[in-house]
Length: 136
Image (cartoon, rainbow, N blue to C red; front, side, top):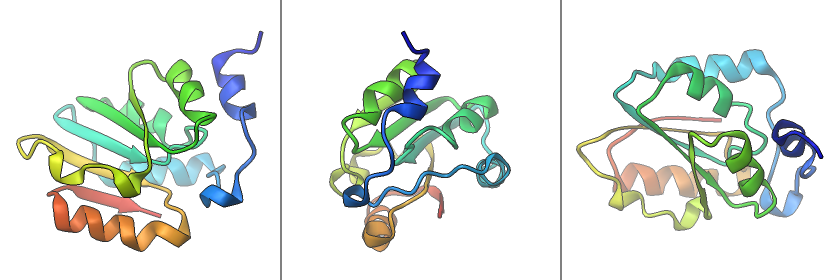
C-alpha cells in the first residue's frame, strides 16, 4: 500500500479539462505562503490545492483553520488522507458560497488558479467577502 503522500503525488497527472498546472517549486510555494503572513488567528482557504505544494507550508504557519476547495474528485480524498487537520471541500470554486463566509473570522484566501477561470473567481471573492488574497 502506498503512503498517503505517495498517493497524493501519484493520484493524477494534471488534467487540462480542469485547467490544472501543479506547482512544483518548493521555494516559490514557501514565498507565496509567506506573503500571506499567516497567524494563529487566521482562517485560510486554499483554492485548488492540487498535490498540496502550498498546503504543507500553510499548515506549518499554524493558522486557526484551513479549508481546501478542490474540484478534482481524485485529488480530494488523497488530500484528506495527507492533511487530516484540514477540511477538504469537493467543490468548484466558481460555485463556492463566498458570501457565506463568517465576517467575524480573519479570512485569507490563496490559490494557484486556472487561467481560464481566474478572473471570475477573483471577482466573485472581491464582490462577496472581505478577505486578504494571494493568487497566482
